[in-house]
Length: 383
Image (cartoon, rainbow, N blue to C red):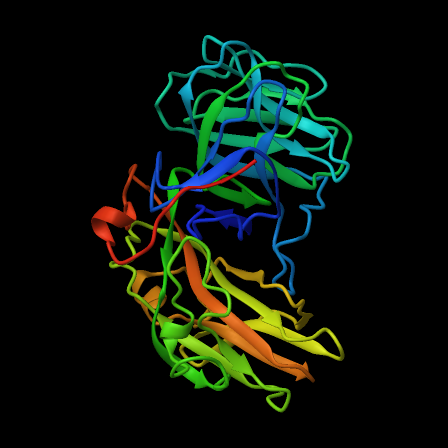
């Protein structure tokens, strides 16, 4: 299985998403696992959703799925109350955007899949309960949906290139309000991961590479260990000067056990938030992952003057190329590398997001006020 993207909303905001629409919040209640989840509760004839694509070789999260071939989307959802009428609550769409397939929930909790036709009922759900959706999409081909491992119900998808998955409702043509939450998303090109969850690992020390010393504070891991949600922008950061071509900075991460990682580790997403002081001249920066004596970098990409998220997916341990183990994860370093630069580059946040199989509800770090009281928490709502 090759992972194309994953997110448990553990950044505590929308920085892992490709885009947003309408009314939603990323907050601490209700959550399935970890500390955060997405809640979409648009009013009648209104939208509310986040959408996700894949991660490019440059680390950019702002790219589309760009597939017509069979693609596998796993995510968890929960309705706070069943809707008063049928609502569309998730969809895979083209770049237009236009529906390729979408999921509906009726007032009685019947879940169906629609492409060029509508499926039979896949499952009947209840309010206040988390469910796993396994959605298989082949553009202009047979596509199917399972709920919690139910029998798959199939349709033919629209003949459009897959670009993104919406968690929530993008359209504004349904005259019915709804309230649903989402957590633990994984997109793959070759199969479903099964039950699982995403946990976040934060920096806890300086790694092998120690450049980028022109930021704030003592230029230690504390400058990129921002409290979530989000990041602290320019309050603390590390920086590379215009004379720091081909230099890097990496950080060790908290242990897998303290981060709540348990069970089989299927994929890791290294994660940084970076910007440049000026777009005049070259400002190519990449994300660096190191384990053992092996470095693995994204390609260099130009920065903007606004902080942006970069990621790198690793289905195997760079140190030897084998399956991840907790011991391998415990020696992972994540950071940034400068290519040819003529402006100051900044990094304000470093972390790793880990998909592990199993994933009992509410396992992991848990809500900040209980298990991690030193971390900020709030619910962000954008209309």
